[in-house]
Length: 269
Image (cartoon, rainbow, N blue to C red; front, side, top):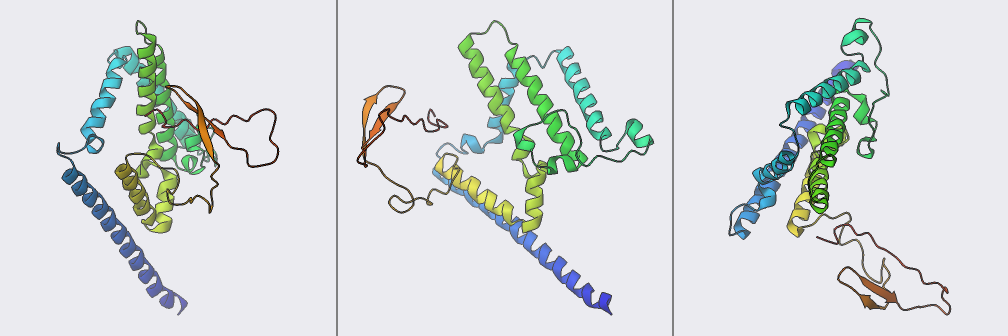
C-alpha cells in the first residue's frame, strides 16, 4: 500500500523536474537569441569581436604559434607527461593498472600532484573525470608558461606582453569557467533545476552590455544610505595616478597621513 501511494508522487516530482529543466533551457536560448539580435542591430560591422568565437581562436593561435609546440620533442613531452598524470590520478581512484587488478579501494581525497585555489572545492576530487580534467589543465598551464618563460632573443617588454597574453589565454581555458567541466556549477544546476544557469547567463549578458566585468550589484550601494561620502580634492596628479586628500571630519587626526591604494584591477584598460 505504501509503495503504491509513493509511486505517483515520484512520477509527479520527475515531471516537475523535467518541466523546470525545459523552462530553464528555453529561457537560456531566449536570452542568448535576444542578446545576439540586439548586438547585431547595434553594430554596423556585423558581429562584435567578443561574440565571434573565431576571433578568440585566432588570438589563442597567435599566442601558441609564438611558442615551440611545432617541435616534435615538445609535443612528445607534453603527451608523455599528460599520460603519466592521467594514469596516476586514475590509479588513486582504483582505475587501471595494478590498482584495478588488486581491487584497491579509491581514496576519498586523492593526493593529487597539483593544487590551485580555483579547484579547492572537494567536488573536483570526488569524481575521476573532474580530477583528471583539472589536473591536466594545470599541467598544460605549467608547461605552456614554462615555454613562454624560456623564449630567447625577444625584447624584454615584448616578452612580458607574451607572458601576460599567455596567462590570460590559459585562465580563459580553465575548466572552472565552463559549466560542463565544473562539478560545483553542475551540482548547483541540479539543485536549482537549471535556475542557476539562467541567473549566470543573465549576469554574463549584463556584463557584456556594460562592456566590463562586475563583481557586485551596481545598484547595491547608495551614498548616504549604506556607503559614506567624504569631501576631498586632488592634491597631486601625474599621468599614472591622482592623489586625493580627504577633508578631516573629526577634531583630531593622526600625525602621519594614511595612504590608501585601492585595487588597480581594470584601472589601466
